[in-house]
Image (cartoon, rainbow, N blue to C red; front, side):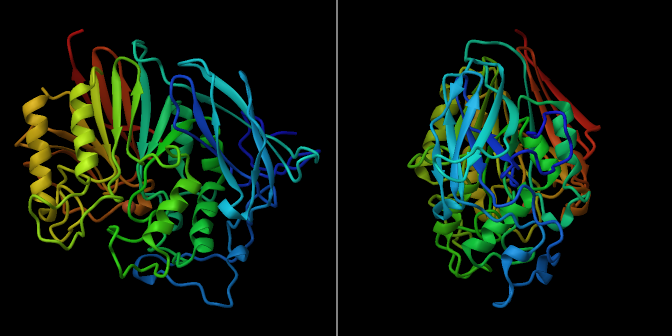
Length: 460
Ligand SMILES: [Fe+2]
C-alpha cells in the first residue's frame, strides 16, 4: 500500500515497504514544470527510538568521536538505488542515487499544465532491474501563466528549530498550512540549525542528519507531499550564526561555507546547477516574488559600513533592481530571508535594519521610493517574532512571519511605536492572498488563526 493522500500516519507500506522516510520536497514550480526532491532510505520510517539530543543555544554540544550519528533519534539512513517520478502527464527517466549526494536527487518534471493540481508518484528501487519499492504519492500545483489573473495564495515560514517543535510529530504550522491549502509555500531560511542545536554540524554527515530528522517528521512529510514550495537559505542552514563567505571562525568548523552551499542545494529543490540561488517567481498577472540570496555574496559583517559594503553583492543587486522595475505584475513582493525595516536588536550586525548595513539599506529604500508607489512590500523571516512595520523614509511595509513555533519565539527589542503596526512574540506563519484588486497579508498563529491582517487595494 502506498502512502495515501488522506492519511496522516507515516507507516511502513505493504507489500513493498516505502523507502522514503525523509518524504519529498516539490519545488521550483513554473507554469509548466517543477523539481521534485526525493531520497531513498534504508527503512520506511525515521529512527524513532534513537538517542535524543536536545541541547540548544550555548548548550548545544558537539558529537563525541565514539557517538554514531546514525543512532540518533530521527536518523534516516540513506540507501543506494534508483528513483523516478510518474505523474499525470508522463514519467521521468530513472535516476541513480548514491552516497555521493546523500542518496537524494532533485528530479525535473516538465510538460505540465499551468495552474493545475498535479498528482505524482515517486518510485524507488534498489537495483536497475529490481522490484519497485512501496511508492510515495502526492500532489502539487503549477503556477498560473503570466497573462492569467487567477488569484494566488502562499504561506511564508521560517526558523524551525528541531528542539522547539511543538508536537511530537513536528510542527503545528505544517498541519495548519496543509489545511489552508496555499498554491505554494515559501520557506525563507533557518530550515535547520547546524550551529545552535545538538549535535553541532561539524561534518557533512551531521549536517545531513539535521535535514533527515527535520524532514522525516510526519507533519512535514504530510504537508510537503501535498504542497510545493520554494526554499531559501539563511545563516543557520548554511553554516553558522550570521555567516558570510570569508567567515573563518564558525562554530561548525571544519565544515566550510562551500560545503554548506553544496549541502543546501543537495537537500532542497534549488535552481539548476550553475545558476544562482536568487530567482523570481512569477505567479500570474497579479503577483511576482523576488527571492534574493542573502549569504552567498555578502561582505564580512565586521567590515566598516560604506558604499562598498553589501549583503546582496553588486551583480545580484543590479539584477534585483532591474527586474523589479521591469516587472508588470500588479503586486511585487520581496521575499527576503532577513529584515530591511526591522527594527532589530541594537547589537546585531547582520541585516539591512542594522546600523552595520545602513548604507545599502538606504540605497535600496531610496530606490523603492523613487520607482514604486507602494506596490512593493517586503516579507521576511529570521527574526523570531511576528511583526508588521513601516519605514517612515520610503513607506516600505515589512511583514516578519516569525518563528515556526511559540517555543522558538523571542529575542525582540520590544514594541516600537514609531515603526510597528503589529508586534507579537509568538510563532506562526504569514499568509499571502493576491488578486487583481487586493493584496492581503495575514499573520497567523501556529494553528492557522488570523492574529493580524493588512490589505492593500488597487483599482483594476
Ligand atoms: Fe532563526
